[in-house]
Amino acid sequence: MTQRDLKPRTRGLYARLLERFLLPEFEDMALRDITPAVVRVWHAGLDRHRPTQRAHAYGLLRSILATAVADEILAANPCKIRGGGTTTRARRVEPPTLDQLATLVTHMPDRYQALVHLGAWCGLRFGEMAELRRADLDLTTGVVHIRRGVVRVDGQVSVGTPKSAAGIRDVAIPPHLIPVLGDHLAMHVAPGPDALAFPSVTDPDIQIHPNTLYRHWYKAREAAGRPDLRIHDLRHTGAVLAARTGATLAELMARIGHSTPQAALRYQHAAQGRDAHIAAQLSQLARGEPPSGPTPHP
Image (cartoon, rainbow, N blue to C red; front, side):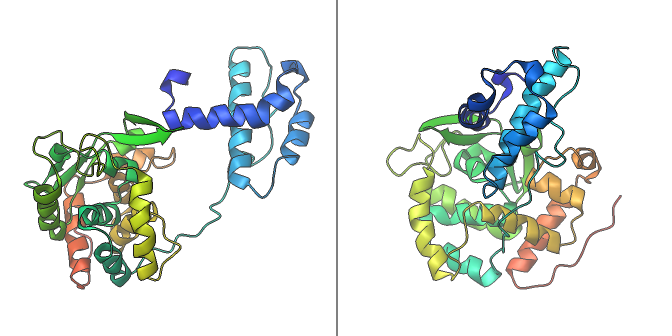
């Protein structure tokens, strides 16, 4: 993967890892001198209390040296630490209850309530929601089209494709959200298909800044008794709620837009009509009704 292929946030992460962890140790070292023993000593010196950072630094070194192997500069990759590039989730996400979710929504300003709904019921990333345009919310067919995302790196705004190829997707909107989104478009969104669904309060052509949203989110989550919740946790909530309808793993992955090598083939087997069924059952949950369960697969 070339630098041009990297997403801005990934490129920034790699630059910081390179500057802080790799260059101080390996910049003046010949590639042939980077042995498995040298890598193990370096890895052991990384902060064990920062497992994700440690895994990312090791993974970057392994990728760089894999390129050297591919270019026949090295005979073998000296990065041989089992599990060195992986880490387990340190923070367990506890999704809000439906009552807590309702409290979160009611304690947010009117212009941001639809964003909380989309995050929780459709499993969207914040960057995906911040870049939604009027044309992306098709309330006639009940589908939200995810085609772009926005990220901020070192103060710079960058709009591009979603985090992964699986992130480009169409998500069926639970029917109970259609009138909510209709009201939002009528009251808070400028006319025109390219108008931002969640613009900055100071400029309708600029995406909402996460700091603006969090100023209100902090108060809402305290009111809900969930000071631990992040905006990103709404996405996890969307996956849990969809799972309660009986959605299969492949359908969940397709709906949430989460890509892993192990799940890549499963996307092909998600039935086309099932996402609308999942969305309908989400509305049943919103009304306090038990989901009717999965429909037979064709």
